Length: 520
Image (cartoon, rainbow, N blue to C red):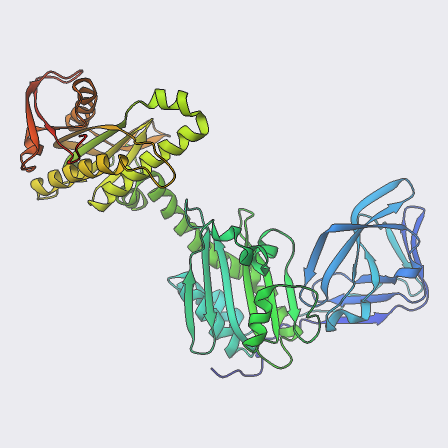
């Protein structure tokens, strides 16, 4: 991929010049600094900043060791509290101990935040501001006009990488880490590589976030709000000690930047850029990226919002039901009347378990029950519709195949019983359940108040399934099903005749189904 001279006009620059004559900084009548060697820094779209030699600062400075910020041009700023008379201003002074090339003229100098300085007096009078123009060029035009057409975050990142290269920025690797709202996946880490124009998505788990590799990485540093990072490998190689930097150096990287991408909810995501140009990134290169970062962030946030909405709906409603809600079925009464097998699975001896085990261990066992049941139902093309206390309501839509839906429900019930009888390693506790299965026509959709809805199934089949489960506890059978459901079960069923069930109108012809284990 050819790298041309940068075409974007954004005149981003940093200019440092010596102040003329004496300069003083005051908080009211309290002198903070007095110097004839002060320097004035002009940076695009920022007010002029006056830097005083440390020896000319008269205010007491107390280092804030736990707080730093990052500038891709000047380096890492170290902060101090400013004590002026009987007042203390937290983090109101900063300095660059190991400045990057653009900021070396103020290395070791101190600047004050507006909170601590009520006025600065100079021999030359008012400090003029440099004039800046508008940011324009191919990358900016693309971001404003075409970037929104990309269909995935992967295609957006690869298109951004190509556009930056075409605009003269020697970026060899571009990544973005977007946090997610998912019970198992912490986020999506997308990596674009210029050579080969390849893009790869990784999905780190929450466990991975505890690993030493992540804990000692630029991604964690930025995501935790500790500021961004720039490491020019020929200028400040020792300022940060991240193992990934050595890996990048071995791959030919000469300059590395990790910067925050804040979403509108305040969550800090991370974008990184690596360059293999002998001189790394220029001020204009990084000026373009940083000036466009807010727009880049919003483009990725659109994808994140859609992904998070899908994850949340699937997590709380299931994939099939979540897709229906996301597809627009969000009004009370929206839904369908369908034929389905309904499975109701209740954890037995739940109250006793909670008393014997205590809250923490009981919750662990309850989650094992829910996870086992959900995994089995999903494996048989069913869907867990909801957890009700210590019970699970699952649905197996029939479509045009009544027998298949019943077989799936019955096989799920047998496998749930067997799986719960097999404790995980290190646990000798077998869990027991009571399962009821019925088939029939149910309303599958939204019910509730105008402002609080529940997507569920309503119908006699759901009620019968729950009551069969209750009856199974009384007569000592783990799986009860209506006779029409068990007609597909073959061997291993015991007719129970017509049962009178609580809150069910009429008798229900039912059978007990053997799970296949000796204890069933």
